[in-house]
Length: 169
Image 1 (tube, rainbow, N blue to C red):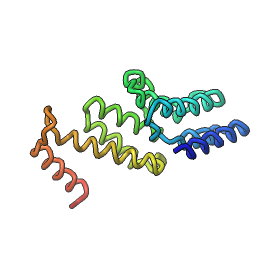
Image 2: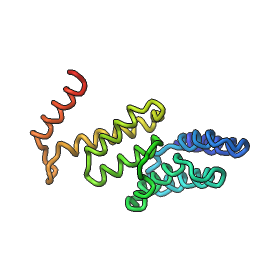
Image 3: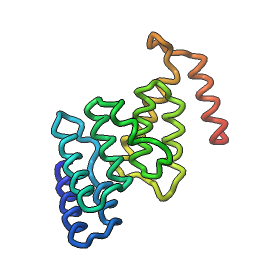
Image 4: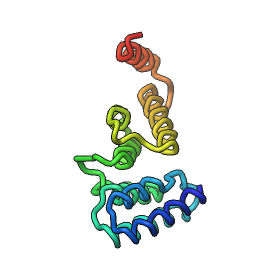
């Protein structure tokens, strides 16, 4: 993860030299989100977001990084204003999906993750795809759990039936 972050910072330096907003977007998308171990992860994400904001203020990819930094810190309410529609940035959709899972709305989590999958231009990086898979797994589990954490067999069966119908199985 550290090597990816270093490459993102190098990309930001190159972007600063050119001033090309698209290079900033690419650099911000390169920052690994799975830095959640300890407080250093969100700080590193903030460093990249700060650098991008200084050069090209208001990028959607930078707002997505800031939302992730807040989510990783557990500051869910502070992240909400950064995750309002229209969400066009893949990482914003992933952050909104994470927030929906925190809010115990797994159906919304799954709908947001479906948007990431459907939008070819918003295809996530390999690391983000792993994060999306974890979010999807957790959302499906939440759909099949009752209020006390027990497995709701009826909900699980309904979920399997819906899955099979959607995929023509």
